[in-house]
Length: 157
Image (cartoon, rainbow, N blue to C red; front, side):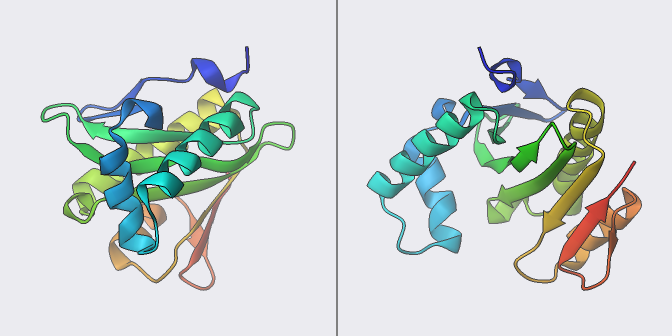
């Protein structure tokens, strides 16, 4: 059994982080289409399978996020890549537009940072944004991340 297999589900007060295989493929497909318009159901299913293989080889730890009240699919978050030997990881957060608000982002990012530093014992976290985002930047600043270019954020506990 891989080390990462045991890390699901992860709960926050309002959200559940669980394997993408628990989400409906159509929901993941709709999320992927917001950033990759050429995504298809087939490429989405292939990507989910690839993610799960990487999890079971302890190379990344990605979850689908659902709203605990409505059970709606919120997005995809996690660590990719993650290197437990060198105690480093890169955070990803890809949420549906309706959930890209400060309260949701704060709850999810706080949980990811705590999980990465406490459970995985990561000593360096990085988050790369595709474009500047003042909401995420403020949240990351409050979580003690630093940046030089407003696109790459680094954290060291």
